[in-house]
Length: 406
Image (cartoon, rainbow, N blue to C red; front, side, top):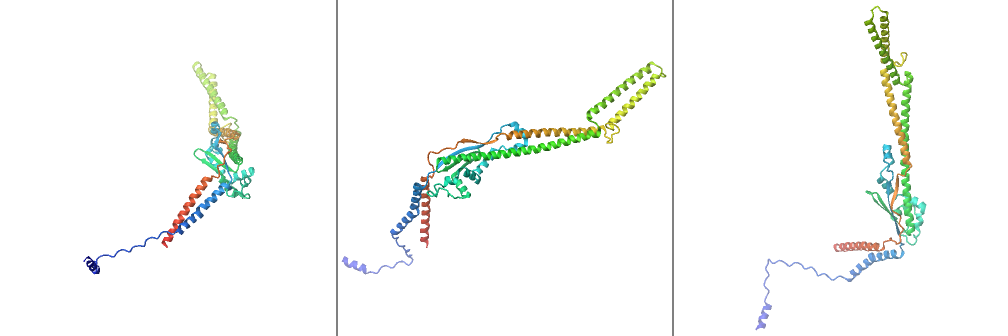
């Protein structure tokens, strides 16, 4: 019975599905397992792009690259002119001689990177010989023996590192070479060339200061000569050597005449009081008084109108003559003081030129290395591995991203 029921149920038609039922979404095919060839290609590209270059770099650094040694020197530019009296005496010339050690340090900083010092050190030590001796064995870190001065300057900035603190003026130079002795010799020559540059700056500043002081002295001397010439011409025109002395003498004469007049007037009063008006002595006293009055008036007219004598063709009056004379005398005194100041400035400039105002103060003497510090093999190998791995990874991601969207 059970078998018959089951057969009937099997032969029965399935019930109709509802019309509003939605269709099932399509099912994406199951991802196939990755092929072994893809992993093999990734491994091959990693070996070719990363491991092989790293092995080559490591082999070159370990087996071929030559050791390089460092010599270090530290210095600063100091101003040795602490003479405040000389600086005050020079006045405006202090800015010419220069007192800014910071500006001198800036000059030295640029000089150490210039072609000029490269030529000077090469002429002394032979940089092409020092850095080109291992070129055929270590061409990466060596200099081409027949390098031009431009190539030598670029290589110089690779092997000479300058550290400069502008706030303090301290400067430190590191030189690396294939032998400790060569590195130390180059460092010492750098110091020598820097001192030569400072000496040249000193000489230029001192020569300029002396030249300007001499020009100022020449101007002051010409001015003093002109004032003296004008004063001499005035004395020649007025025929008076010393106007003040001449005026004092005339004033003394006038005072004496006034004293005599007072004396005669007193005598006349005595005569009038003691004698008769017809006494001839009264007439004589009156005549002397009149003569003294005439002399006093003439003397006053001479002081007020004409100078020297009445026949002077220039017709200088004493007020005008005194004013002109005082102006000339003031100009002469001012020119003389300016001449003395200019002469003192010249002497001070010469004294300053005899001193060494600027010098290189060394706080780290050129060192002699005992152990090679370059090339930094481990750091270079690690950085090479890191950057090549990053490049390989980024490139792989880009390639597979493009392939997925094609």
